[in-house]
Length: 226
Image 1 (cartoon, rainbow, N blue to C red):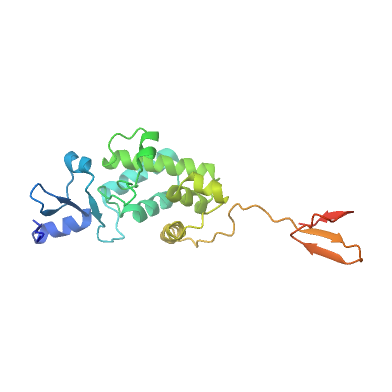
Image 2: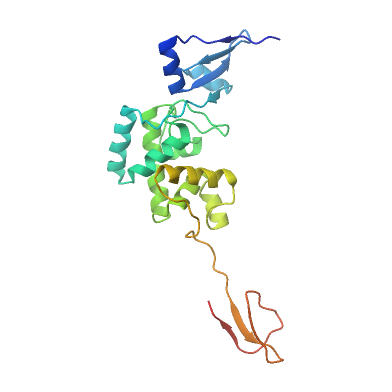
């Protein structure tokens, strides 16, 4: 079956479509339709695919002013918020990830409910909840940027499970991308990890042994040297 694609963008409108990103849906006749708008019917069908917007370093003025207001209100780093929004969606309010995250700050349903968001496609609600969630994580991890970003991307449970940045390639790339936009070097050496104990003891033959693995049969004086 041939698939027809309907695109209604003139020279001026093409730029707007690329900036806002495109939503792909299938109409009642089986045709694939590309549009830069999203209605409630489309959202409920669950057949939406987001085509990422063209990359631009510029922040739309109305979003810039809103974020500046929110960062001042919640006392959070402006560079962190802008970098996360840029990485998450390219400031596209219609962005939908394969995992179901929506909007400029890519809110999952659970996170949206946590902050009282009714419509995740509403840019203002989405931005407010995203900034509030970032502030919560930033305070929880005492200003540790990699951990804050890891929790925003992979979830707090993953950070807790691995006692630091989880070993997910996507998460590590995400952290590097955001921190690069912030003008920071992404290193994970300062993250919270359990310290390895180093033991020092003397064997029955008189040898002094230093090891991170303590044999169960050892008796006598054992010194922990780290």
